[in-house]
Image (cartoon, rainbow, N blue to C red):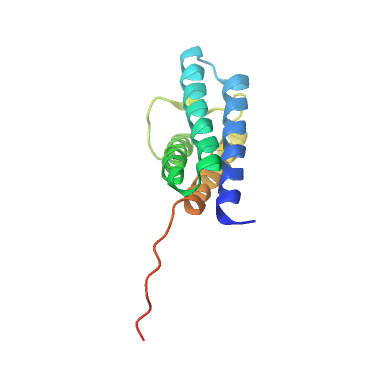
Length: 127
């Protein structure tokens, strides 16, 4: 499996998990709507990446970077590293340990998807 396909698979897993979490455990209808809108746009970007190839990787990588940042923000909030006032947005089923694991796994998956999807320039080795 090449890097792009693995990255797309990770994006799909992140989108499905985030959508389910937003639908099942979000305490706020506005937050659920925002989450579903962001997930829908990311899903469309991912479909365009699959259809068009490499040029759309930047858009999907950007969405994944945003998802990474959101989950790192949630992990820091739950760990008490900083306070944003969004703690309820990051709780899953009101269970602290499950929420920390969820945020850590989602941040890792989104970060790894960014790593896989963004193109790299090869540098010539000087000998």
